[in-house]
Length: 112
Image (cartoon, rainbow, N blue to C red; front, side, top):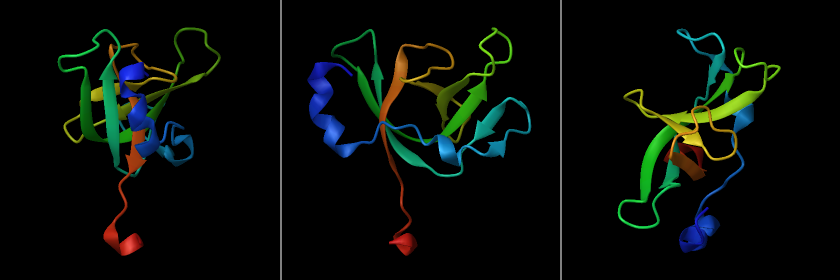
């Protein structure tokens, strides 16, 4: 994470919620979707200022790399309710400039 945003680390987790990505995607059999929504901190790796940070509500997903001889390595991504995808900074699916660097699970008031 860019050192300008280090202070945000205390508010967000950065361990990808791999254990909840268990729903096999109907369109892509090598993708497993998560079931919970998260508030996600997204930064642009190429920018330092000027729209370099966003906060979005996203769900996690994992993709198995079955095409590039990575022996089934899992890659991490995030998706919004409109189907737009974002990479996770740890194991990016697409290696895009915009990457999720922190997240916090949205907890229903009834769960507290």
